[in-house]
Image 1 (cartoon, helix red, strand yellow):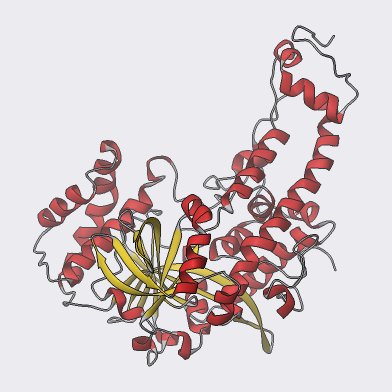
Image 2 (cartoon, one colour; image 1 turned 135 degrees about the horizontal axis):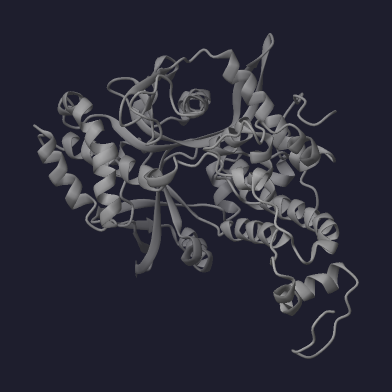
Length: 496
């Protein structure tokens, strides 16, 4: 099969792999469990998928350029805060009140960022949305950052369908008005179409949400038909409705999954990906975050004599690091969505407990004795990556990132979530399917992704001036390892 060809099926781990009865090494016997961002990168360009999978860089679809970078988070967090305040009973009459709330909410942000975010994004949004947000009723069923995941999301293909794993996070689920919202600062006031692939993003999230069986929804959602929810891409300047029935998106999805598979497992996958990049030097996607890697200035590197040797060896390292992420991060995603809760707890992957108090960002949880032992055994990893507290299920719910604070008694722990600025909503805990919550350690997989990025940077790094390069110990060492330069002791030796 040539690279980029559509797949007949997506391989998922078997039961022995899921229950960790096989040694996790070598080429994985399953395909990845991608996020919506992963699929969007692959849909944008095969080269973006290469950077995402092998080089740990997922920023091809950056949130705007220039002043926009980094403001999307503040924009979304404040709107979530504002709607939650109104749902809790606060009355809003004009933009002056909203400005007061905003200044208090964003008081710890950089001054320039705070001012420009209001001026360019939040104020235009408030002017056109004032009537809509004023109409929000008390205790409205509006949820923010709802996580969705399923190992079997169906997409139409010819006369049937194919299923793939997919996970992501919905910015806003408005049950009252039957709307899913993807919010972004990208776009301009006069745009007549949504920002690049943002319509595809909310469509993917909707497909994932609809694929989950009713029994895995929060109890109050089980009679809701998400199939007929409206999909909206919301910018500061206007709303863009998105069609639910979209054959173009269906085929784009099949192609994206095929590229992800081929880059990892097909011998010529990476080569084919570069051969099918979606732009050229004269017709570039200027808003692509990876533009420099394709069309940046090629500097003369003094160790260019070993560049090919380095690339050959580093390619194997990149693949092995990607496999390591499959065996850890991606397998864990499969386990959460393919194993039942009791099996997950027996394997020590998750912990369940009962909420006692939830005040001022501090969550006190009561655990069974055996659960307490597992929880404390994971303290080292938990202190590095933190914990995720899951309200709802692993399929659909709200996840809070928290840090261990204290063991308040023999079977109680205190988790601090005060740094979480997106509210659960005024109806926070109703997404619970039962009185217990689940928790798991956020493993430090980002360290492997950092290693991927650092390895790629080293592969492409160099110095322009030969005199400096000849005295640089890193370049000399690379020339020795990958080339024919001798290794000599002494700090004053200079290559001739």
